[in-house]
Figure 1 (cartoon, rainbow, N blue to C red):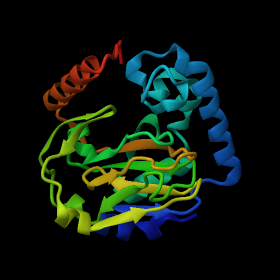
Figure 2 (cartoon, rainbow, N blue to C red):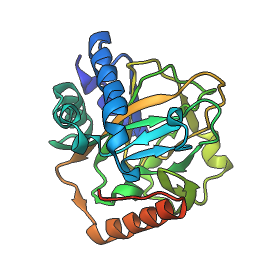
Figure 3 (spheres, one colour):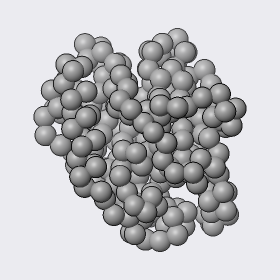
Length: 254
């Protein structure tokens, strides 16, 4: 597949959807390794790498971070040619793949994703960074699909403040009706990929389904020109660590 056809829309809107980004075989292999990771690796991890809605209920696992540091398969996966080729085309320069992540909204959990911009967490300049978000389940409005504000990546970072949502410590403070009126609802099938710029505003509702999960696998790619504001990033990490402790987590080491 030639990904150059998506570049114009990505630059204009700050996001793009690529149907069936992975073949059935590649998606099955990824799912098999994710299941293995949950079964074998997650029980060995500190709280900072695996978040639960309720740790006493393993089925409420909601987020896994830094997966490439914990497992050889996901360390190698960062070099996957298809993902990297797409990132280089959309960002227009060589890229540096970051850690693999996994997200879930278990059935009937009050777990919204607050409106935010990823680069508020990343602290990169220039903000030539993107998140590639692969659907693992059918995802729609009932179980908490993504909602993007088209063109918001061209307007800079909005003010954020601390939230009470585990895994998303910061949310936009002045998100309102005007933003909601510009939202685009992103419904996906397994294997579909949603890609968004690091400063595209996005959010997601809770999963209101009684039976369906809402799982996704994601990777972030930094453009080679990006530089980290180390002090700002350190301060934000301290805020997140304090939030984790206040919620009863034992963060451990990154």
